[in-house]
Amino acid sequence: MPTSENLNADKMTVRSVERALDILSSFIGHEKSLTLTDISNKVNLHKSTVHRLLNSLEHRGFIEKVPDQDRYRLGMKIIELSSYAARSSDLIQTAIPEMKKLRDEMGETVSLYVRDHGERVRLHAIESTQTVRRIAIIGQRMPLYVGAASKILISYKPVEEQENIFNSSYWPKKFDMKTYRENLQIIRNQGYATSFEERESGVAAVAAPVFYETGKIAAALALSGPIDRFPNELLSNIANKVKLSANHISNMLAYNQITSHDTRFRN
Image (cartoon, rainbow, N blue to C red; front, top):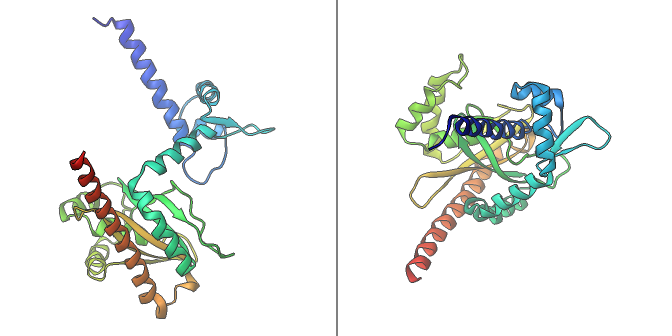
C-alpha cells in the first residue's frame, strides 16, 4: 500500500514534469530564444526553479543555451520529435503533395490548420518562393475569431458545437457575433472563406475545408500572401484552385482510410 511519503513524491514528480512542459511551451510563437527572466515570467515560476528545470532539459537535449549569450532555445531533441510527429501524421503526409502543387501553381504560401479549443494551429506550411512572401511558422497558434482558416474551421462544425464555440470565453467582448454568424452560412454555401488584413496588415488569405471520410472537417487549407496579389477580379479563380486542392486532399484521406481497412481485413 502506498505510503504518504510515496504519494507526496509522486505529486512532486508530476508537478516537475508539468513545469518542464510549461517551459517548453513558453517557446511557442515567434521567439527563437528566451532569457531566464523571459521564461520565468511566462511560466510564473521563480528563476531558481526555472534554472534548475532548464538544466535538466538541457542535459537531455530538449533545451540548449545560445553560445555566448544568456539565452535559451529549443534543442535538437525537440526538432527530432517534431519531425517524427509530422511523419506519423496521415493528414500532413497526405496533404503535402497537394500543398506543394498548389504553391507551385499559385506562387503563394500554403498552410494547413486545425482547431485546438479557442485557437487554430498551423500543422504544416509550404512557403512561397517569391521574394515578397507570407512567412509561415509551423506550430504557430492564432486566435480562432480572425482569419479565413478560422472561419472554415467553425463553419463546418455541427450547429451544437458552433454554439459551444460561440459561448466560450475567448471571444472579444465587442465582437460582432451577429454578422459573423451570418457569414458562416455564406461560407458553407460557397465552399471557401476569405480574409483581408484581419490579423496582419497587408496580408490576404483564401481557405477551404478538408474532410475526413466520415464527412467531418479535418482541417482548413489556406493560401495566403500580400494583399495586392489577391485582387477582386482574381478572387473567384484563386478560391476555385484552393477548393480543388482541398477536395483532392479529402479524396486521398478517404482513399487511404479505405485501403487501410482493406489491408487489415486481408491480414
